[in-house]
Image (cartoon, rainbow, N blue to C red; front, top):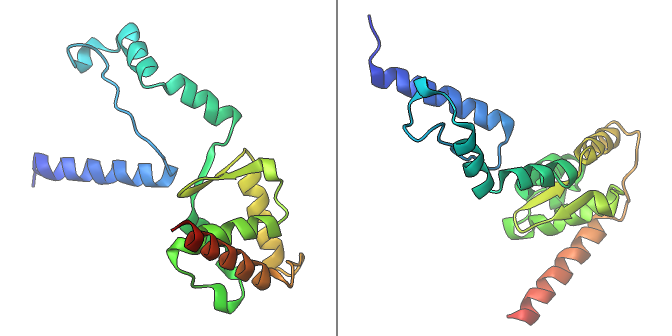
Length: 169
């Protein structure tokens, strides 16, 4: 039986979504290949370059290459760190996850210039996520110790964060 056009389209979209989810792409830009939008006409290099320039794609690519290409949501990092956290800190409110992640990055002795913390994500230089993963595996395997004061450090960081918020509002 022949599949309908809608069913084939749905399958292709699902396949594309799977690819995009696997790449953890943080942005998508659509580029028109030519003025006529005709696939048979191929790419009009000048037209495509103008679009790329207006979207600042070359600058973004340079920034990602030289700067902080690794981008991870705080919730994802927290889930990764959860195994090394004391039991009572494995479930913190979403608004405090950033504070916990910052404290854990300090506890893992990450080079301060190898990461930056944004509003919703942590940004890592090339190789820094590999260091995080290796250190977490070493802790889980008992080959590396994490500060016994980690829970106190996290509690203190949360207290300071909450106190600042109360003072600001």
